[in-house]
Image 1: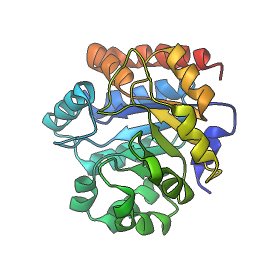
Image 2: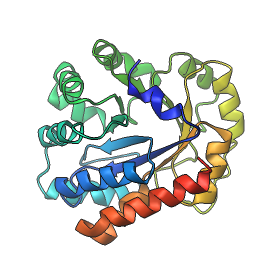
Image 3: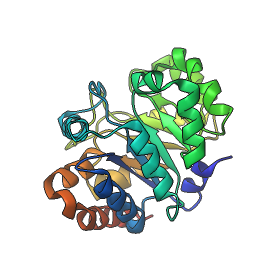
Image 4: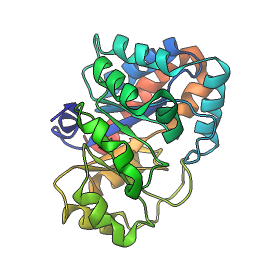
Length: 257
């Protein structure tokens, strides 16, 4: 069992998403450390991609800025290796199939294991196609993390039954982004998950306030926040780490975690 399980061992988990290389890798590293200091239990690191289909405008823009800045996958592996000198919480990559394909699946997984990445999330890879990636991950102790969406319906039990690391429950239809209200029957989705696996599940897409995080974590094992953090980094640039720290701390406290 890798580090991911430890994120859920001390109450509800707060999971923070940060796009690597926006505005630069030095700031990314500082923001990761700030998020951990603020109470983040797990970090999702976004590897920028030119066509991030699951992302809303905030994270799309962050991807564009990072790519324009010249960030590479190799540099991001180097970033994780550097972070692992003092960051002990689990870290997973969130990116797209083309990024892994172009690097080489086996080679990508080798590098993940070498630098201390614990798993990966590929939102454009459906359950039916995960075996292209999952065996290479398993062979190196990495979790290939599955997503369950409101449209998963009859597939939820099947996806949950083979889940690794944690299950990412997508709260709303559409792309990532801040939402004023989340109306999906998260409780019903979680109930079905619980009937089919003991793997923890966390809810993401649209969570931005402590009240939302508390509600979603109350229904599941944790809350995932991306766009709200990425927006802070876009607004404050190199000064963002102190704002990320304060935001994550307020979210963690708001969750009662």
